[in-house]
Length: 306
Image 1 (cartoon, rainbow, N blue to C red):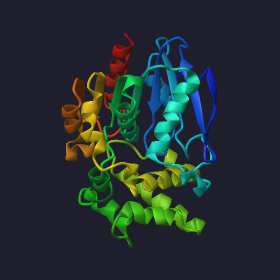
Image 2 (tube, rainbow, N blue to C red):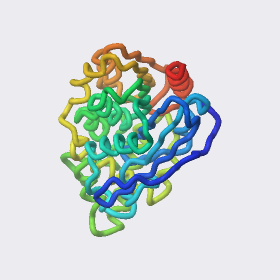
Image 3 (cartoon, rainbow, N blue to C red):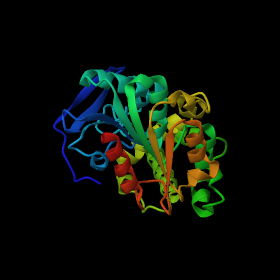
Image 4 (cartoon, rainbow, N blue to C red):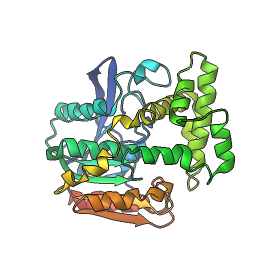
């Protein structure tokens, strides 16, 4: 990865409905524009997201999606952050930010939920996307979120027992009800249980230190369950069905062989449906950027910069 850098420009974008979206720009002001889409939903952009692109050749645009990071209101502080917070709103925010910064076309870089968002952005605005690099691949389908909330139970039985205790049905919806309960202690305990399960199903990575922060933990859990309980605010399977619209947009798709989302075949299905895409599988890597993933991602962004 490239060395740590600081933004040379930043601000807040007023997107309506009481939301202010934090954005920043790093790297070369005259470089190839690239927009970074973080995961979650609700993870926010940390400084390490700046390091996947060459700051001498890219104009790197990052932003915190509604309700998280430095954007306001924050879901860890107020349920108002969940209002007017859907996939359609996030896509509109990307376009508003592009117009604000005077970008004609840009490379789209994202992971996990950021991959879902990037796919829908490219399918909706193909003329705005010069290329794409996605990792920890996901398409936002119900099958994917069902795998993560139910299907992996037999793989991690002890963690599953703690996660599902006292609940049934759609666990995303059940947790979302707990996370918006009037009692703050109920919310806090639900956030702890949800984030413990998130750690458990990524055994290739150590527990996330960000989950130690009660504000982050609550905001993250609220946003993930808000989206998953609502089918990611997408017609089920649409991102994969409409991948053919991406023909002509070059893409590198990077996936770890130990990422448990592979159980559904998502990387191969997306690659086969996206004409001209390249799938790079990283041995022994999981759902993240470790184990050789970062090197593959930097190689991909370096190629597109050339």
